[in-house]
Image (spheres, rainbow, N blue to C red):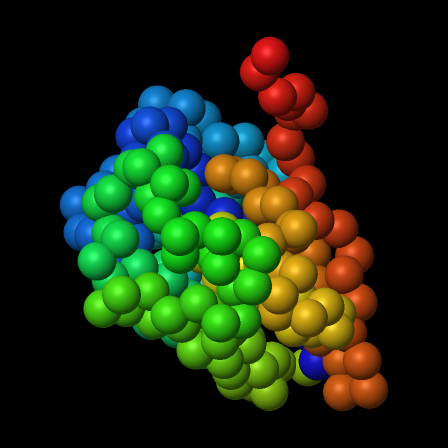
Amino acid sequence: MPFFLLIRHGENEYVKKGRLAGRLPDIHLNEKGRQEARAVAEKFSGAPVKAIYSSPLERAMETAQPIAEALGLEIIQRPGLIETNYGDWTNQKIKGLSRLKLWKIVQNRPALMQFPGGESFFDAQVRITSELMDLARQYEDKDSLICVSHADPIKLAVAYFIGLPLDMFQRLSVSPGSITSLYIGETGSQLLSMNNGQTLQFPKT
């Protein structure tokens, strides 16, 4: 089974302004996001990576592009790596959503959360883990694969493979442009690193 290098796309204006982009099309990296993508690409220059897979959304593909160029590989789109479907919450500001009763479920009991008109966290977790397992079966032991995806899918995948209950997945953190290294084995999985490559940031006071 292979090593997965799970990369969250770089910053875009939705991330910067605290708004849920979900699966909206035509959301592109901003200048900081492009810098983050280039920084990730520099880390992988010359690395023995077998393949690069990406969510089909533009912000993920734009993050994958400089990595693909650095490695001389093509980007393979995988719909299973796409962002969570937030349904009616798509394009809404997190600040406003945080006032809703459902927000407490999102943060404290996410296993029970079904986004109005969208996915449940449970279904999203099944989707992303099934996608990674499908890819894993196509490669040899200790091959390295890059998957560019989104914050919640990456956190949901990590939680599943390390045996963390779904209700606790929000305790994990995945920043824009970060790298999470996960080994998925037939007899067990290991989280090798998480949220790697980010500058330490302190909460605003």
